[in-house]
Length: 223
Image 1 (cartoon, helix red, strand yellow):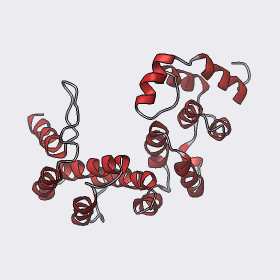
Image 2: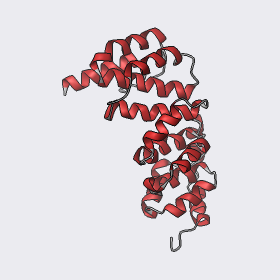
Image 3: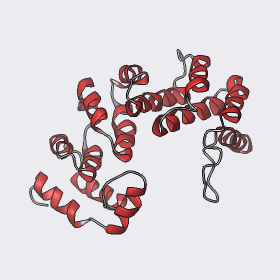
């Protein structure tokens, strides 16, 4: 591409539209039809372009926003920009990539984690829980793990789906990473039975926390 313009990139994305990919993506709540491997290849060719990233995000198009997150400069965003983007990111893949590829690399990650954690919007709160799960695994100092388990025990069963998934991931991570809390984490999972019957493909680990915890601990012991 001789000159990188939003119109040019949007035309490329339109050319990548695949009805089969759209059908698969829509099952997961994502309204686009671009194969993610091809999207990543386009991002690799474009390289980092922060201004173009902002323009693509502003289109509101899901595929364009995913591409924007791949070519942006994560540390260039202000706290308020990230907060606004998170609240605009209603599609699951956009939300996940924003949190994992951008917010986690930002100097504002901890401030936003605290802010989002108790947000009344469950989709926003799920981002706070995702960032908390990251800290449970990588930097647990200062976290109240017992308090997190108290909240999970009281609220996970009735939480909206995306918040429930995020809380369940945190529950599993506490059980996997922190032996002193493992028995309680497993016990909470067994009592609440969240995702107990979730269909899991062969050779994949169930998201049901007791199975997930025990399997990951076993793998580490066998390694």
